[in-house]
Image (cartoon, rainbow, N blue to C red):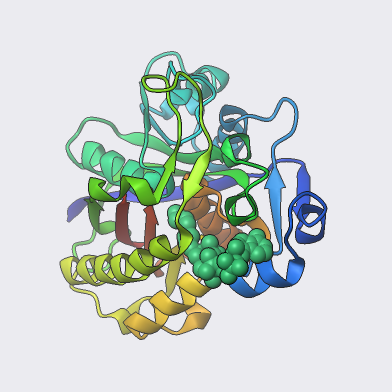
Length: 323
Ligand code: COA
């Protein structure tokens, strides 16, 4: 038997307001045709009054706890991945903790932008297997709309808001076909800050800043890095790409998803795609897509699932797990 971190439940949350491409075309010089052709995005959800990163995270966490049949009091670790916290400090994870009525546990945020959920999941997995915790809530939540430049058509059409969460539990599982996270691999290369960043911060401008991106450069790096890290993680777990049941990628652009799947020789029908409905929700995108495919019955217990993401930094990573 091997001690592994098993996903016991998933949950997600979206803001009330859905915005389609036609509505964006009334705000900036763009069109439904351009956005669909270049990105695959048709709609996104945008947070309104009273909806924040933490409030979306709480809703996603409650849904994941319900699905897992786990009471909040059993949670001893909360890791929240976000680039858009409610406050500069304290960590939004502590806002989630208080809202769930958990009086004492470890709670902190992870900042790795679009790879944030993979980073948070890997940290939680290491803490669970190391004995530092038994039951973790791992959440990705964002309100990217609040840091977009709504006059910049090259970025504002690409992002959306939302949250996704998983309940992760340390369990002794069968060495060969047991459930749980089998392998993870993370990377960062800080030389690429200038290709994707926010032009502000507490210690520099004293302002929150707006998202800036050189899209074509990011695209090129994304396809290469994601294919590489997926290969690495499959090799670490001694799994053949042909045996993977589902890939749940970061949802940035439908063309990146296609190109990455092709590079690995994966059947595109096995790639979970939600970018058309949710756009790029940064750290929320992988758990949001995972929850979507679990709830619509595609991902079933025992399936081999690969999660992957790449984001600002650059940071990138992948995990392979038996669901
Ligand atoms: N509507 C209409 N036209 C637009 C537009 C929009 N929303 N945004 C850009 N354009 C224009 C550009 O100004 C450019 O016009 P020009 O040729 O007159 O200069 C033209 O469309 C092509 O722009 P380009 O940047 O070459 O398009 P692209 O095919 O590379 O697509 C992205 C742009 C951003 C969709 C694409 O590069 C991408 O998805 N990159 C990766 C983004 C990503 O994954 N980011 C997150 C990582 S976590």
